[in-house]
Structure formats: structure tokens, C-alpha cells
Image (tube, rainbow, N blue to C red):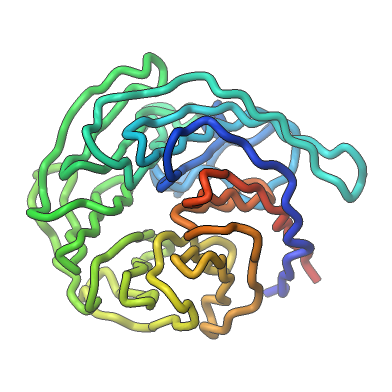
Length: 298
């Protein structure tokens, strides 16, 4: 298997539209797939396209905030030169219904047509809400945890939710019943991601845990942050994580080693996502930063 290295950590844009801390975001191609590509037959509803794919197309970016709103953006990307990436970002919608901070967002593909985005799922104020991305209207409200829901992850069969109660619950989408309860963190669970049959979670206890989803047991623990972990994204063998310590770390999943640090935010990093060679990050400094993280194969 070829090794891959990140080219640069250059910031290529800062965009403002919220009136409070940006806590959450998600991004995918507006059509549901990248330029000239369709998702593989084995792709799950939340895993859309190869994140490192480069090209010119329009992506949908959604961001959630302390101001209780969700902003929908359109992001156009391209290459201005062989080494420089160009982006154009426009705000297109603002969604309001939550009565508290919006801590979790996820764009989900249409299960009947994986070539387009289906719904948006959001978590905050003790509730999980679903939205139509086409109309911007709210659809359903789902209640589960007894404490604040900090994070969600959705796959074809299940929903994962993490809470201040220090646990993660795996719910059946078909029945609404719990499948597993994951216990091990010693403080609130702030972020989760299902990736290649494993679950990754970040906590205020400053650690990232990797879980076996068949047994609900911890298999690895990543350490290094000096503050609580607010967000993570696992992609292409790397785990990117953002923390109250204002830093973004990149861990190699296979070894658990931290291979790269991203410095620039002046407050805690509350949300991030790697997509099409760009690392998007949102912070308590009220900014969204874009970083060049295209990979080089050798």
C-alpha cells in the first residue's frame, strides 16, 4: 500500500456568517458525488466521495453555531495554478429551529438516489432534528439521551450519538432501539465517527478512543492534546482532531503517532472536516479556516 504525505497546511480562506462560536460543520458535493464520478455501490449514506479527489465542482457546506442557527454555504473549488488551490464561498440559506447551541451536523445522501444529498441531521438543545436540504424546512425531532447530545453519526442501519453522560449509544434506525452502549470515557463525549467498521470518539478527557462496534470495547487510545477534544475526522488512514488547546492534530491511525500540527486559530477548535483536499475548521474565534491538505502518494 502506497504511503501518503500531506503536502502543506496552508490556509486558503476565512469566511464569516455566524454571530457566535461555530461548533459544527459537514460538507459534500452538492450533487452527491464528485466531478464525473458516482459513489461506489458499497458506500454508506454518510460516506460520500473520496475526500482527496481534486477538481472543479460545487460542494454544500453546512455550519452550526452558538447563535442557534445553521448556515448553508456553496463552495466552488478549482486550481488557479499547478500548486495553488482557489475557492469561492457563498451563503445560500440560514436554518432556525433549535433553541440552543447546534453541536452536530450531518449531510446524508438520499438512500434511493446516492447521486444527490437527501437530508440534513442536526443535534443540539437535547434534540436531534432532520431537515430537507432542498426546502430548508424541519422534518422530524428525535429524543434519546437524558443529557445534552453533543455529536451524531449516521450510517445506513444505525445512528450513533455521544453525550455529556460520557456514553455513546448506537441506535437502530429501523426500530429506534439501542443496539450498544459504549462506556470508557471519563468525561463528556464531544465527537464520534464510524469508519471502516470501527467507531472513533473524542472526549473532554483529552483522549480519542477507537472502538470495536461488534463488542463495544476500546481497541486503541490516541493522546497528545492538552485540552478537551471537540471534533475529529478520520480519512485515508489519518485522524484529524481539534481541541480546546486551539490546535488541530493529525494522527496516523495505524500507529497512533501525531504526524502534523495545524496552528492559527486563536480560540478552541470546535469542528472540522477534510474534503477534496481541503481541511475546513471552525473555532471560538468566530472564523472558519480552510487548509490545504492534499495528499501526495509515493
